[in-house]
Amino acid sequence: MKIVSIFVISALVATRLLGQEDTLAAKSLLGAAIERIEAGDIASFTADNLGNVYILSSKGLLKKYGIKGDSLNVFNEVRRYGNVYTMDVTNPLKVLLYYRDFSTVVMLDRFLNRINTIDLRKTGIFQAKALTLSYDNNLWVFDEQTAKLKKIGDDGRLIMETTDLRQVLTLFPSPQKIIDRDGYVYLYDITKGVYIFDYYGTLKNELPLTGILDLQVINKTILGRKKERFVSYQLGSVQIAEAAMPSWIKENDKICIMQQGIYVQDNSGISLYPYK
Image (cartoon, rainbow, N blue to C red; front, side, top):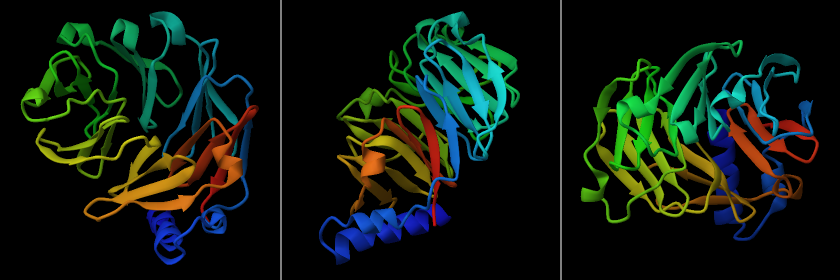
């Protein structure tokens, strides 16, 4: 994919050939902003693979914007179960809102209409920080109480689960993020690293990739930022590639790395910088 080839090649140039920080190498990754969403009240945001942006305000309003920054839909029942802990837009047709205080998942369609609600407590899950939509439109949830990665159906039933990970891992993770991509499930704990499972729940690898913000996985490459630098790690490689981060990105609050470009949040809104 374009993001992987450009990002990795530019990062390798910056680290292996130049041997020093080269801001121009990182700047060459991105073009001028092509989309701008003016929204001063942004508690959190994310983007899907179609280029839609989802903004959650501090007042509990969820708004969806199109690829050109046009307002599409609004969901105003966000706080029915308290505060949204995390959003998942892996599938734009099935948006997930997770309310950690109530262990409840609300599913929305592409128009942000409610289509389902799952109470994880009925499945026996009372402590979970991370979940995501699975490739087959079920849920991956990490149950911290039992130390198991579980797949839950949209009817709340338990489909499968791993063994107790405390029995096989030296460092027990408390993942902040789960990603289902390219045949693998990635559990990310910012202090312990990345744990990779196959779809049968078998642990395939442990990677000591820590301290990475805005982590994303595209085409079996882990991407993100760390200490004001872009970082990428392609599965099976021997080292992490890095590239200097432009000041107009590192000085802002949050970024979201997607196939179409990098979304950057500043004090007054969100801009999309496409890859060249």
